[in-house]
Amino acid sequence: MPHSFGKRARTRHMFAKKFRDHGPVHLSQYFLPVKVGDHVDIFANPTVHKGMPFKHYHGRTGIVFNVTKSAVGVRVNKLVNGRILEKRIHVRIEHIRKSKCQKEILARVKANEIAKAEARKTGVKVDLKRHPKAPKEGYFLAAAGGDGEITTIQPLPFSDLV
Image (cartoon, rainbow, N blue to C red; front, side):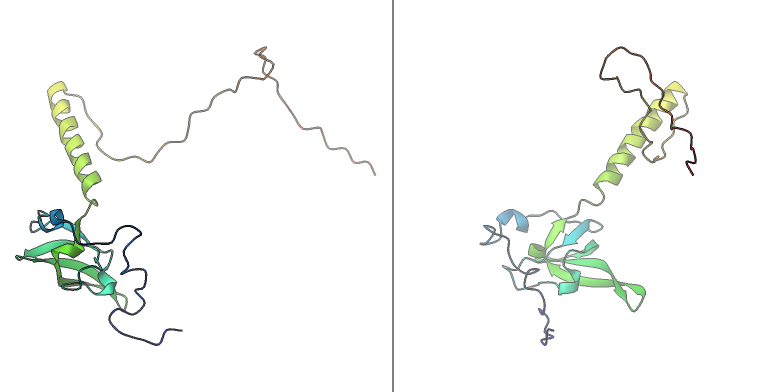
């Protein structure tokens, strides 16, 4: 049972670099274009100790509300005693990644706009809703003999032998 309760307690694997992933931060990370309203993933980079988020926020997704010269303010939801609170934290840019959580939604919006424009031109009603994947269509499996005759198999009738 752990007996230390520091800020980085129980973060042995969380704040460790992966194999052959050590070394300084790439310069492209510092030029990451971040705007207010962007969705970002908070992912603590153990190479840089300054501006590192608390371990609870590691791996969380939030929305940028402030951008400074070396840090980013992020709104993150946190579960506290059964209620969800919106926390506002500032994290250095090294610990931020652009989130891909909106990629599918934006692609669907773009496809829906194209479909709506096409429907307006042709006058055909288009369904833009998402539908669950339908079950596979039924089919007949070709017999091993190859004669093409369908054989019906039935169980034997029950007979009491007592």
